[in-house]
Image 1: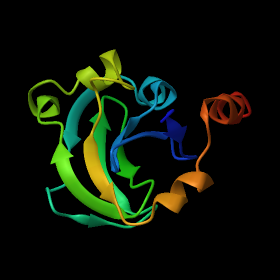
Image 2: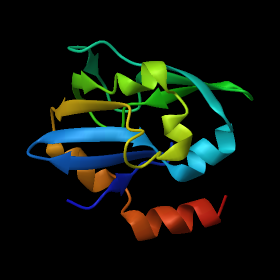
Image 3: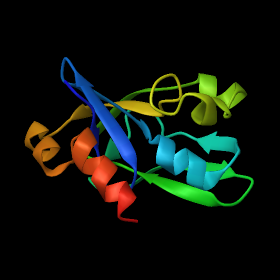
Image 4: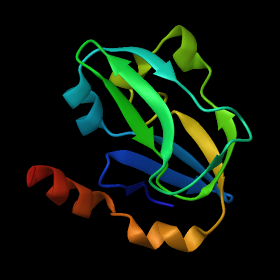
Length: 123
């Protein structure tokens, strides 16, 4: 599945019913150098638009929101030792967590890449 994007600048990639979630390149550029990432606990249940993680940069601390309802099944432990991975590869190796979805139809509410690009250009 092609990536989907939220208005809160999270990206979502679905594979075999598991969604990988991270922040977009636009988000990491806005934050500046990432110095710490607080990831959710495996097994934590998330609700769409609820707090899921925290990312701290030299500029500010920001919440990362759950783009969909679901449950955390994996976190990117590499971010503990190397939070700068979010700056270096935000939409690939710098992912935050993987979640099983409660309702895949929520994906329809998210933007595709072209719509997200237009959204960011309008900011």
